[in-house]
Image (tube, rainbow, N blue to C red; front, side):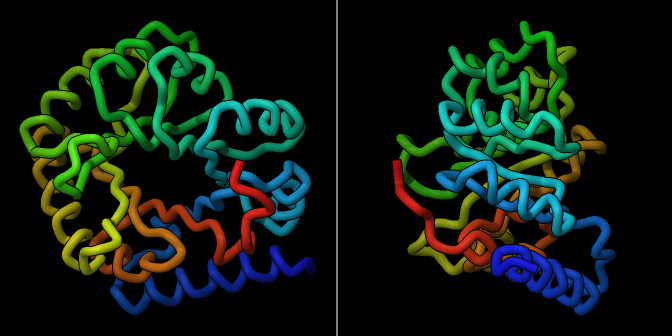
Length: 224
């Protein structure tokens, strides 16, 4: 087993144990290996070890990687900011987009020939320049627009814990907003939250999708 494959197995085992500690079913938590900047060969290596869900954040890197690995039965998750003019292209290979944050992206996906799962991105900072909706009202407004499309299945909410905030507080806020969304749309009950440094706190607050990179892949070979 390669070093990356061994790390993936160790992280998955840790996640399973943490789920049990919180009385949760490990099968309800999806581990997404974020492979941005890493070659398709690493994805293939991890696939052979048993990984099936992979995350990318830049279309220009993800598209050729997905093309190279068409022979593999895997799920691509797009976890970066989506440019409206690239949304349809992303939907050609990504089964799930975790960063729906504005009407123009939803409208672009509404014209796609491909159906995708979608998470509404939450902005947990005071910076309006960051991606994500910044209030429950904005979240519900975008959710209504998503539900009006025939090409997006609303899965739930996604968030990144700000560096200057206790991740437990950040994920508690995410859980509260998730509850509000679920009251309006009961099937939109998934939470995409938690990365290499804070995923244990995310599990504590109900995360169903963890986006973990360096703890599995190691340091990035380059930053683009």
